[in-house]
Length: 154
Image (cartoon, rainbow, N blue to C red; front, side):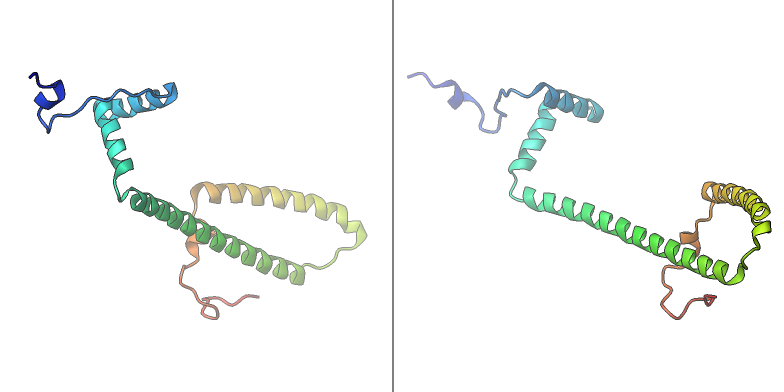
C-alpha cells in the first residue's frame, strides 16, 4: 500500500500555505521584509504566530497602556505650561494696570505710535527667545509648591 505524501514528510518540516493579500498589504509586507532584510514568509510567520499567541492581547494592552501613559505625560506637561503662561500673563496684566496711568487725550496719538514701536521690539525679543531659549517652562522648577515660590507676586 502506497503511503500518502504527507505521511512521508518529517513532522518538523514547515508546511506550505498560500494566501491572497490585498495589494497594499502585500506592499507593506514586502517593504517591511526588505527593511529587515528578512523573507516575506518569515515576517508573515512571525505576525501570524504573534496574532495567535495567547499573550497577544496582553502585549497589545501593554503597548496601548504605554502609549496612553506617554500621552498622559504630554497632556500633564501641556497643562503645566498653560498654567505657567496664564499665571505669568495675569501677573503682567496686574502690574501693568497698577503702574500705567491714563493719558490725556492729546497724548494718545503719540503714545499709540510709541506703543507700536515697543510692541514690535517685544515681538522681536519673543522671536529670539523662542528660537534660542530658555523657555519659561524650563526656568520654572517642577517641584514648586504653593506658598514656596522664590518670589512673591506683585
